[in-house]
Length: 159
Image (tube, rainbow, N blue to C red; front, side):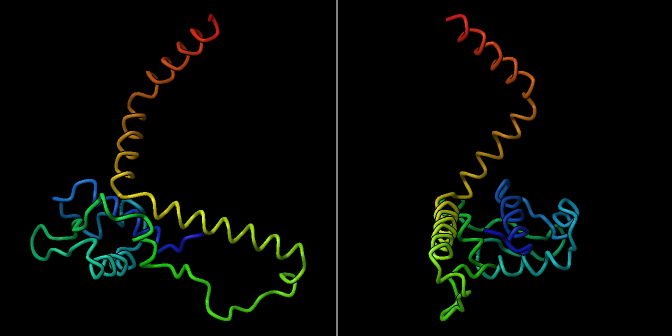
């Protein structure tokens, strides 16, 4: 499953907001962090605000902030705002899809898409935040983790 740029920007933005729900973050701040146009990002943030996932805060110190429930919002909730994941009705099929090889390949690709949808639907923002925390801690203590893994491996080999 390939996501559009707007969808990726929405996921990055929502996670940035969810890390600290009380903080107001401007579109320019996020745009600079991910090296994208602030104007383009503002359109994405506007859609997220319409959905109620983030809220726009006007005035000095304004920007956007997280307004949803990180334990209930899934990655799929965000993705669906920007992607049409259902095949269009009466979708034209390629001639090769009527062959046994084409049908088999079509079945595998459909299954992959379904697995991707199920995975995105099962991962909440809270789960992503825990993963981000672990990875940030992992970057700080990377040397220590490598040393612990090596020690554990030596102990296992001796046994």
